[in-house]
Image (cartoon, rainbow, N blue to C red):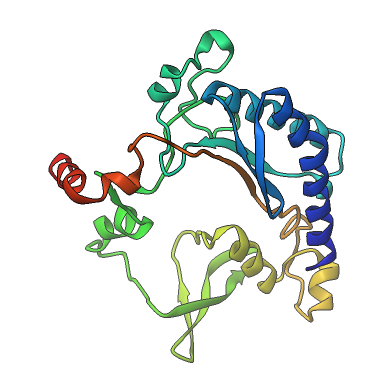
Length: 259
């Protein structure tokens, strides 16, 4: 465990002791067991679970506001009923409503995370739907598109400070692909800054230490990267309403017909 990871681990344990445990008691919950940095908690009702989760989230966000960027804990808190992801109408049926301060949230990735909404997933018509199927497949027949597989991008090609293509390895052979208009860097949160740095774009001190010639000084590249922690509440259920029961026997046949 690195020094940063160890520090984060101890801060999470402190939050569990100083924030989560008191709030669980306040909302008449019970910590069943500790799980790594988090805890498995039981409540008497969904309402109390939701109130506790939002209270904990508000306290942690308030604490984060007074801490330097590298010491903040980035997390989301949600309510999980065993194997079931509870839909908004189900939660409202348990007594959680707008009058109590809990509103619907159509997009919890928009910046505001309080409230209830449908779980976001890469699906279409009930099936998993990858970015390749969603965006690449419809464009395969375009004359200006060429797809290369088993290719590892190694650096961005520049003409002065203008990106004009990419260098890559394919089956051990060095290749280049150049564009006529623009190059789009979309390698994800980790590999995009990595590729920029390999191309000489980033913090000059770090690039020089790695013997990479500096093409453009941009100190924010590769900085402020934080782990994304998720704290979950898991419930024991008494009624046969989970996916475990819905994927067996006659219940499975019913779900197949419904699908």
